[in-house]
Length: 276
Image (cartoon, rainbow, N blue to C red):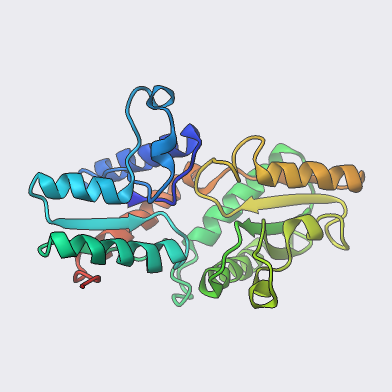
């Protein structure tokens, strides 16, 4: 399974299906597009008549057919609560009924401890430079935006990528700053700062800005008319001299498959990680 968080928007499921198809071709294994949650709420008529799959019902259906071993390939950039908490909880409960169940989970897309691996940063750089070229921007500011998270380990991945982006970008950007789309209330979640809505229009981000989207696929946040686009629109009303432009999303870049293929092999060669 290649697995994302899930969305209520069909575009997200289509994107995951595209990645699953490319991974099936690349690996020679049938890779199923399976979101963790949400996507089964999408009307199948909007998905060319094929209902979306989500994690627990998919596992159960395959278990009933006799399959007991699964590999989950996370389309998550870092160790999110979804992969570190939700999945083990669900697997532990399923194993009460299906004690032979084995679930292997491949590493997330980015390994921030491997300083030599700049592949994701290069993808983000490619997308950022393409956006700058498309809009004829000369040395714009660059901000790398993610969703925002309750887990600091995920933010550390974002910051790691921003540092790599700054190093790779050289003088093609006036500055590079990571930010979040949103955050939870409370000082304990301040590591998500700055928020995109507060960054745009401030010193260094008051003119041309490229927004590198650390999102895999379109959805309520990153899709057309989504939350990030709304934040940009509001910021441009408040700061008329500023123009901000979003990059394409990560799943559109062919280099992502190279990373996922490596994570797939790492997952195949790992031991089952969740046991009751």
